[in-house]
Length: 310
Image (tube, rainbow, N blue to C red):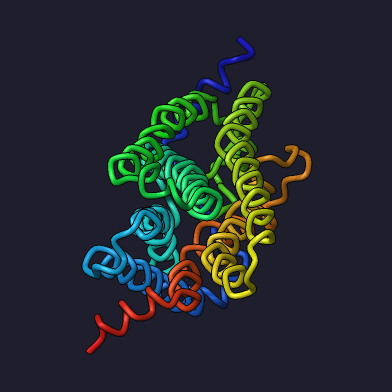
């Protein structure tokens, strides 16, 4: 008899309300304009990287092959959250169906996992290029590059479909308001009734597998890279080697820093404002700065860009 109210509420819960930035009502149109231009910048910037890496012969190397895939991934990643957020800001209708919420969360988590793995592969590419340059063309041949990228795109899919199904099998018998701008695990778990310990442990396990372990592998790669660079005899060689890695290091720090704090913090430490800020960082800020970081700090990319522009 005690479970009946929860069951009734569960059947009535057919949609959620994404609160987003409703706590600042006077800035809704301003935020819409800002995020609209950010979205355009992300699409154009990452789209240009995909275009120049496909068309310029000087950029037909493993490093730019991975960068092209990374830029395409950034377009997909930001498109999983920003269009819905822009619609909510424009219409002020923040309702999202249970299925649409599950679909959005699944894509965000899936693409986020792929990004972690792809950044790890990019670090491995730099490791081979700098620490074993003589065997680089043999180790990082086109077939291996394609296999690595394919593995990144495939690995996270079944895990996140399973995790999403588990989260949405929970009874949501409390409020229907998600204090976030997209459907994410921490705010959704706050709305679930009953024991969510198993779900929290699964979130932690997946975060360790797809965020922490890749991050540690990247740190390991760069510790080897730095020690190799410091042993180079010429200052010019050291500068050139550091410049090929610096862009990747900046993107890794921006993305992993916010993702680690978001998904590996204890539940008691979660606050809605902090979660929203950190999520903005890894879902929007990193994709926006990625093209600038990789092109402005890279002579080959800048030359290809000049060829492209009339």
